[in-house]
Length: 489
Ligand SMILES: [Zn+2]
Image (tube, rainbow, N blue to C red; front, side, top):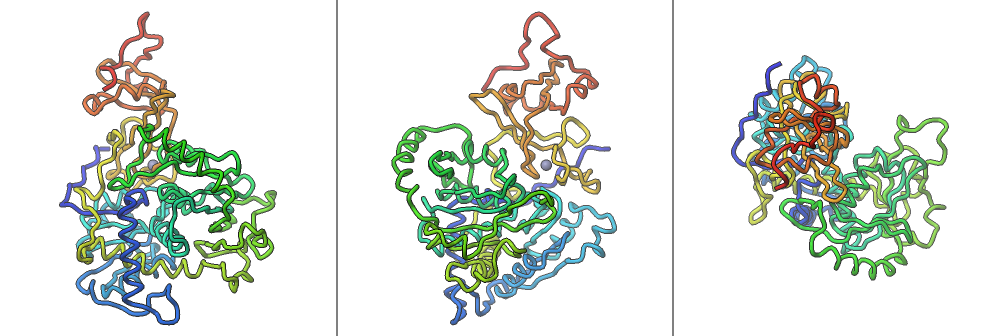
């Protein structure tokens, strides 16, 4: 196999494949534009519904590429574009599309980019939206990629909370059900942390937030666990452009812990402002497991929920009682309605149709990460360990690369690789140096890698791979521990 051709870097554009591609300030901009559409195009009887159309996008076309069916997401994007006065072209039937004939996503995107001004992609593979974006000269919006992300759903969830409660800071939000495998929940908790809300996990048995989400909440979003009530709260958040989480505590850290502790007692007594119910996914639940939480009138009788809005991404399958629909706390249909103004706002901002309001654009469509980027052709070295990642899709083999952010931990001297496409992480690998021909199984040795010497390193999945490629263990190679490269920068 030849090495993958590099996508041509196009003029500046902007893609949104993850909620973390957007800074807090940009999220606020999207919300203010969404609100202005609700004000300008009202439905007189329902304040949360867009009731009329405009023509600001009359010269634009949205392509919706759905590689798996999701009627509601597709229709809400298409409704948003039609409400803006734009046109849509759609490929909603994967069975008869060119993908079924074997065309790669990278090729489809480059062809379709000539037909439209913006595209939304839905795909069963994790990281597919990122790959599409890397080959697209026009803005790409992720409409859900495998179990990775669904950023417009998260925007809609946060917007709903914001509409119901003026401030997100210190807002207590309970999340119930499958916290393990739900992509909407993972994006949602990161967004809650970034806006300073307090997360109260209420998992179904065995469906707790995964370790990697916990770790990311602690290390990148500076969250702290309150042993008093089991809640998770962000110490502080950084409205960088776009959001760039920090790995190491900065000077504000001690101050934040102090203010956290004093605020903690007060917040602990607060009532729950919202209960976010996740969808019960039958395929993830075995017969033996019992007690999937069901949110009904009885559950909400507890006084701490007396003012709690009930949110659900819908569709529901029994975990949310239909008799609640007439309860004043039921907010899920309103939440679904906000999908239209939110998507209108995102589309119009990405197309530059809002005077005086913009989302930043970048060469290649993404802001540069603060983490070092390891980038090697597919045949060499380690591949993403997530088997549902787009890098494992045969059709895409000529177009994907082994790309990881190097996540270095200062204190524990450990290290992890985060796949650029699907963002899953690996904490077991073998680092090898091409110049010295040594390899090391200590992941902490990622600390030796710098921007300057990055090209000297290759990472393997296992020791055997390093040995087969002619590398020698530095542990057993000599009496003195050799240096792998120049020291830390
Ligand atoms: Zn991956």
